[in-house]
Image (tube, rainbow, N blue to C red):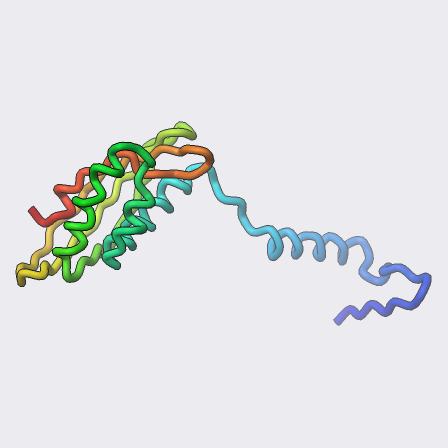
Length: 153
């Protein structure tokens, strides 16, 4: 074990050149981590929204939708969907970034949807959604989504 003792007027010379290289590498690996790729924002957004659907969290879902007239129009429908769902689970979800130009991106969500409605109906069905996202002022939002595939209809 390398021990460096420092007294007034001394420098940390005991590490040597190789020690400083390892120390620097350790700082980079532990301190910085891997920077986020520009493409991970849309996928993270879709993952967050999927988790919100499973939790029945209509507020998070609505806040994830692009601020527009569409969000105001769809709000009641999303609250209705989350109100009739007793439980919802996405089994083995896969999230695939189809394209991303830095402003618009499309993400495919594939999973097996298991649901239970408050009226007693239950079911499973394959889910294959393509979600269009848009970046506004550095934040990704959902622009387009086919909700009919989430309703169990």
